[in-house]
Image (tube, rainbow, N blue to C red):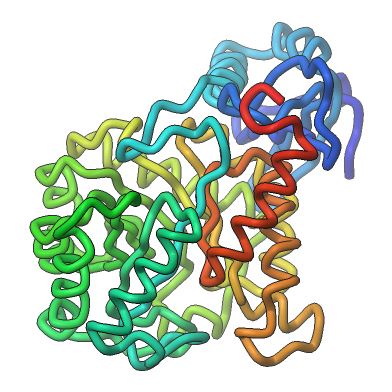
Length: 368
């Protein structure tokens, strides 16, 4: 239920969240911009959550200021902090600036990934695919040696290293034109991958899956991407349950950011990913996609991975992952409209084309 902001009366137990209401059409003179970049907004939604119950209120930024002025000190500080993090310009992440949306190209060197398992399992094929992604214009090349698809089994660290390290070394041996990230949950693999040339750790367990991961990531000094996943990949789709998926995922990621900061990882080194398809039903995924702007309140760059995901098949009936490009692009554009800074894609050239058209329609990028 949505009400005017003046009708929201949070108690001491209420958790508050801010969701900028960004439209598909760029505003000429928005009152504020997400991350100081392209997604402008004049209206905002407050999500007030008490346990399993939530209510939302909407209004202008002036309405928000007037409403917040009447709150208690803690709630007022929360609103001011969220608004600042929503609108503060994002610093470069692993050397990548966010004056425009950036594409992360997927390079799975696995035999069993959900859509391209085995396609790039040889060193030659992986190198060729990586260079193809870079030529298509990706800013990040995400290399993974362990499938985390629903129902997948874990891979031993030694085998994962055997798959990814030679590929990273080969691609990093000469100027690449893109940053390399290692998609791994294991501290040992992170160490070897960074030594080989990776500059970002992309962890589906948000540095919580290995007891050494936080300390290792802090010591390595590279960028980290914290993703939300409910449960383990093997069983994560068995019993996914949420009362308010976006708010609960926000809380989890906020806690992981705090854990990173306590370990010595500055917020500027952190990006977040709400984890579409990782322990979520179709309903959960759609709720997250419609609330992506809320996650900017964490004060980090936001990455989404929608490419070829099963929710597209559930919506369209398309059971072949490689045939889900149109749905992948539609979901990507929904993210761009909400200020998402990075999109993870299997089909880099096609995604780049979609982003370029989207940018032209939004005035070219930053400050559009």
